[in-house]
Length: 55
Image 1: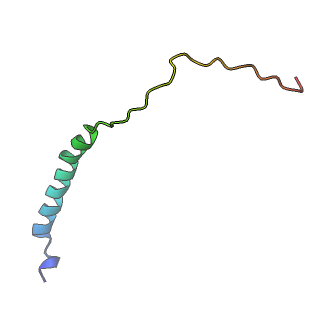
Image 2 (image 1 turned 180 degrees about the horizontal axis):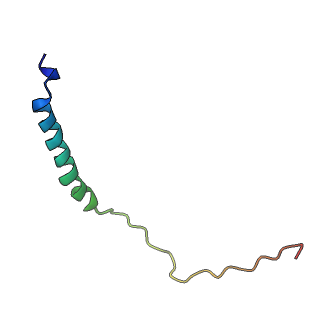
């Protein structure tokens, strides 16, 4: 049974993972999103003080 011989399949497995780890991540990281969210306003909101009833 040739499936039990790991000699050719181990190298295929290693080379396929090298392709996955070397080629595909730069392509994914170079992806640009078309709808980048933009902030509505640049001024920060000042929080109002909280009045506790027991204070």
